[in-house]
Length: 321
Image (tube, rainbow, N blue to C red):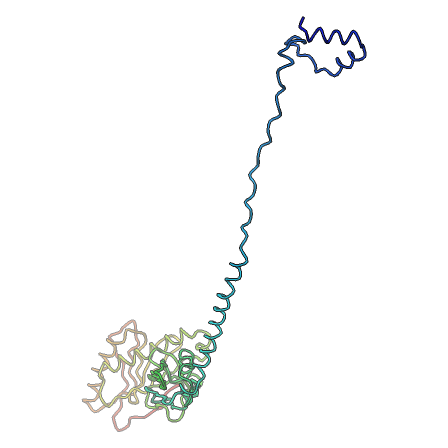
């Protein structure tokens, strides 16, 4: 027995109460080792595991007040530039120093100069830079005779307007007489002073131009194509095309120099070749035809003619006008 154990026994013998208190406060004995072993008393207890460190959020960088105040001059400079630019633009587009002294208009033969200037809202002294060129061109193109318009400027004081006008190819009778261009578009109502020496296209319904405008334009183009074939057929210098009539069935007929010619459906060039032969033969015998029928699809080679002497030739007016 060691000296320390003997000292403990001695103290317990002297004071039983102190012995009991000492035993109660002593740690529990390890069953695997002797209770009075020096190793058991000297071995330190394992300490608790250290807590797991969690990554902390990075602190929000703080902008120094000096840097914050350094942005203010840049913003003020930008705002001043924008304001100065707007003021400069307004001055350039309104100053009378850039007023137009020359308003040049070319290509207009049916449109009056005043009509073009009014449509484009151009007046002498209008600021050259303040004119909206595209808008002015669109306004001019609303005029009936104008097919295309171009507006340009030349600093310091010139505005030029170039106009391409429509060319009337025929007069179309649809509840009134309207001028038609080569693409079949009815662009204006015929008025005094408009061309009158044009063939008249009849037999078209007015409602078709409102309900089926593209189909109506195709019908007008078919009539214009027949006019071109008649011109190429060289039916004689005295023969003047007066009317092209379209039936509800789609058949076409024409009136040339007082002669009604029923052509039926196309193609028309072969029929017009036979018509030229018939008219030349009638002219050689001093006769004129009042009616010529070439509309037979079953027998396209047949030609029916109703003739009379040249002195008794009637002069009927156009149909459907």
